[in-house]
Length: 358
Image 1 (tube, rainbow, N blue to C red):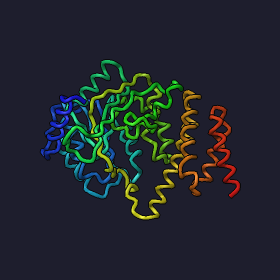
Image 2 (cartoon, one colour):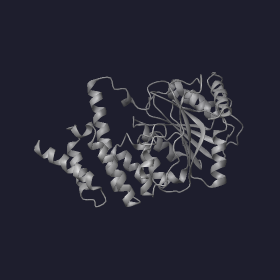
Image 3 (cartoon, one colour):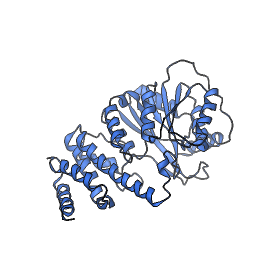
Image 4 (cartoon, helix red, strand yellow):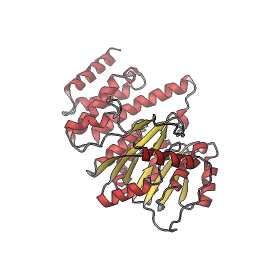
């Protein structure tokens, strides 16, 4: 990030956090939007106005904002209704019951009218006024279907200096190539291997890519794969195109430790903590099964499934009695698959032998 971009970000954030009401820029009412921004909300009253303001302050005006409220118990809905009175580009949809943040994203994208879609978490915001115009022009001129951009990551919204963690992300590999598979997991900051896409908020993508993978997304929701769903969504959409690009422009601010997207995120007793641990372990299993059963390039996808099931076998989930019965069913699928690596099969077999001895 050069000095000019840093100064642009600081100026935009200073303006965006001063509490002034945003008068919507001029736009043609009833015209189909070029960009749809989805904001899933759960008890987001405090930060939500700033997130929406960072959209309204863009120099690109032909967009819609779709708010999907996941049964909030605070004043989030009242705030959105207030903003709708002043800006008709905003629409509100309310879940009848709490269904989780991924369902809210899915529902919002399904309702989007724009050619391109972005997803913004309620606590986050865009950092420069030229974000939408830059992404839209680049996508249109070069026929790019997914653009990734950089995020600032921090615990507050005031930039005091340039020592914030800047995540530029690696350039997305073409996922059909097995030899660069693990680059999907490489953390650009420290070289360790992690899932490179814990958030989908710093991506700009064509709506039709999502339309092509809806049936898989419904599978994710039905299986309740809660902890890897952003990665899967990006994984599925990127399988349908070679036209991907990552740029170093810092267009997004992600707040750490500010996740209010689900009531399950506030575990405060032993029972809730145990329930959360069970959910993570089941989610890990179902994610591995999903990768095994929904393949495009067989060798590459099965390697990825092996990678994930190996992670399961090396963490505490393997000792979770609540998931062992389900694990046996899924492991049987892995043992029967000719493309699963032998060392992973051996670990699976050892796990099953231990289970049989209990």
